[in-house]
Length: 170
Image (cartoon, rainbow, N blue to C red; front, side):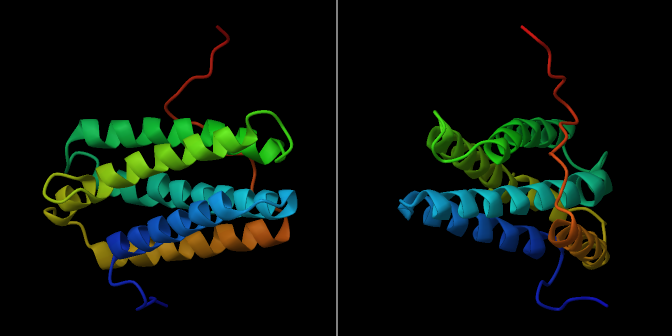
């Protein structure tokens, strides 16, 4: 059943962006370790779900229809975030660099969101100029998002899996 709360796929993704931005703001204002851990987990879950629906449904719909570099960079940016997400999920606020990891993740996401939402030449602007049905895409993305949210509630989500970056020992 389509959800009319979001007019199309891009509106859904932008709503996700705003939610994560609010969670990062709440994290910055938190001082108690338990509150930070809970907020960091919420951020990580939101980002895992968001990157999954983008990588599984949204980005493939635009392959060959928008600038290839735009999509390639988005996948690599996601992988950088996934590395931090997994590290944050494995740690706790008392660990060295924990707050720094959350801060850098926030900065990476800000950059990524800017590139997607930039007027005129950003990814979303390019996507709007194609013939892709953004409403049908929204429905597919919402269905997948609901599956992932149910999985998080029942068993938790697995660690985020990088797709473009091959982690190599130095």
